Length: 317
Ligand code: NAD
Ligand code: ZN
Ligand code: ZN
Image (cartoon, rainbow, N blue to C red; front, side, top):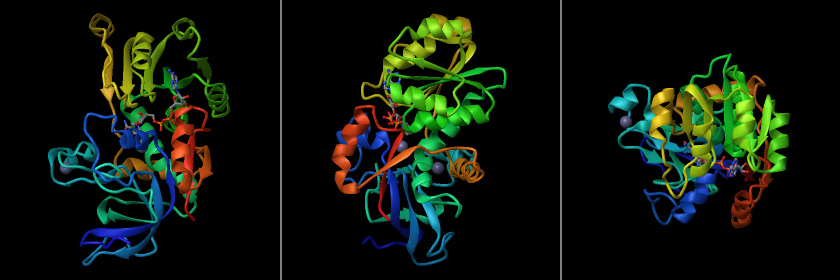
């Protein structure tokens, strides 16, 4: 049972989603390594059960989400400019600080986000990272109503990205390499579904190419294929974070077509509030299966096999 300092709260975790990032963290995949030992998890949701000394923005009993951005300084140019996820001295939940694969988690009162009463714990958990991350990725891509938006990878992140791209008014194209995911994309309203195991380039060209491509798959090959499919003035948004960390950017095509390559990291507290509000008003569907935290290692294997229906969520109620 952690003990809160001033500005901190203790949250009893009711549900915690399994983001692919947790697997990267556990394996030390990325150039910047997590703290060790580490409690992973950044899709935790639960009740505040204790508040540190002094004034607090949240009270005991509040329902809150504990997103990836565990803390930001609040005064650097990025925090002040509304881009707190690019804070110069951030803390990441389940990476630089202990996360929500736990009964009780310490969080900063300033950076937990309140969850509307009508959003269930199991739905709120994936929205806390998969939702807000892809909502932001769609926002920065600025899709227009007459444009096509391709979502590559219809997993935890991608199944939300697809719904947000529809909400933003683009004509959506979903790409995955698993039959169940392609069916899921149809069920969630993708205008077109493309099997990434086939000749993706030809099929995309027949659809008139792609204006926005959001790549959630941690695969440089998928990023390059998405780049190749872009129309003039297309936007490639990189979201998946491959262990190999590089893809070869075709400079000539990028220049001649005026293509933008954009990195996008999670979303702000405001973005997350917007995602919860969209969900509360019935505009998104979160596809999950629940698991027990004790089975976390089998769950990692399940996610890596690609056969998980969108998101696994540890039910801790
Ligand atoms: P996931 O495992 O749930 O989903 C991956 C999906 O990609 C699966 O549906 C799989 O079938 C599909 N896929 C695999 N290979 C493919 C291919 N070649 N073409 C098309 N589809 C393919 O993973 P997730 O939790 O959605 O996370 C995805 C990535 O996003 C991870 O690398 C994670 O670390 C990263 N991530 C980034 C941010 C960010 O802020 N940028 C936030 C969260 C997660
Ligand atoms: Zn995540
Ligand atoms: Zn800052």
